[in-house]
Image 1: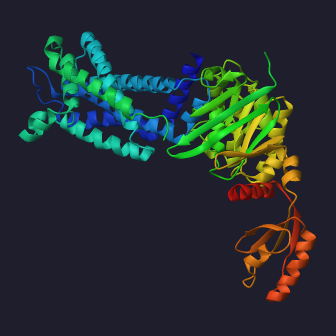
Image 2: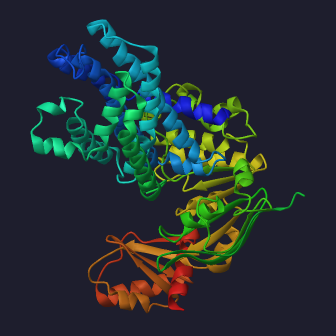
Image 3: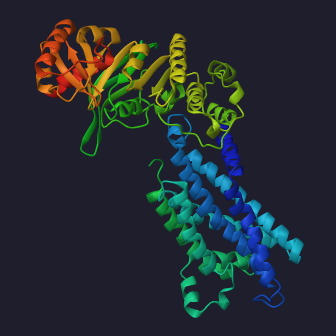
Length: 248
Length: 307
């Protein structure tokens, strides 16, 4: 147990020494919140009496799940493999799975921290309404999304041999998912064909799910979203199983 | 039950595609000895040592480490071995102290970390980032990790590769000190003088096969009865006529010099001067050395090639 704990601390220290990752996971979401929030934030939302910012806050939390998975976990695992420390671990009694566990814990911490940060800033700037129930449901659905996205991150790490290549692949996934899932701009302002494409992006359903629970809608209406996310998790799990590798 | 044998390899094979990297090697390493595995790059040394470490499974044969089967009791074995890898393998933005305590937490048995720090002179580097260290210091950190569980067996893969002469000589002293503490040490190297200086016994590997195994002194005296005659290369000298000189067993040629391996340097040199006079060229910078491990190795691989 001590070994797992030490490894987590070790990984967190490495994280804190990497400004680029800190930017993507903790600064970028706030920049997105402020930029798009100040443009669209006070526009009326879909439901009567809501504002656009109410939909934007949970969407950004979901974006953080994606960015932590495809950037942080993906690049960390490639860096680990590339530096050769995984090979060194393999001649010690620590189990390989400890590395995945430690990375996953780091990912969850970053996602929680990101959510606190986003909700906190939105409260300060737009004085959004926060109910305890929607807060809990938001966290639960973020965790549910983590299953698929973390698997995706680990799967992607198998495709690159260098951290640079990994961040290239991460961007190729992140930005289409970001813009086509309606996080950055409302889907309603998209041309028709882009809206059709967005229906094929799992991220769209994740965003809709977290927005619905945050807005206090009944969970029973989220059958489609839950199903898409479950299929996504299974597919990414299989991909991770096939693509993930410990050595070059 | 304590045995005198630290490692036992029985007809071990490893294949990559169609290439046999390790081809039926059997050997025993006694407790407390420094055992060298030598051979040119690509001979199969690293594959062999990595199979002993449990990092690669053998495709055939048996490996027993400290009396335990490497396939079945890998974790127990890993508690008691230390490994120094060929290349550095620690993330750059890590402090020395942090990586030491991380690795220490992996083991049930702990070494006295302060003692390791003192032994390797790491005290001033504990708060330095790994990436800021020079090659010699990085290698010391790696050695500290290999010692962190007070191991019974230490595997060193090319421990002095890329080190400057001072750092290399320090590394040799440290290795000899570790043996004095009663540990068994397995070391691979392609520097024959390293094997000669350090090892109690040496296994010579060529193309995945064991071609000789003995103490360096015995190998040299049994097989290395040759001497080396070196002189400056000139255009007019004909390799075929050099090869025909009495007692010459082999010729090495570099861009600037020629080395004759001979069973009798005195006579060979006499005939060499005659030959040079006949062919009308001058012998310059002539030098005679006695055999080293390198000569033994060259001789053995030449014999192997002729078979």
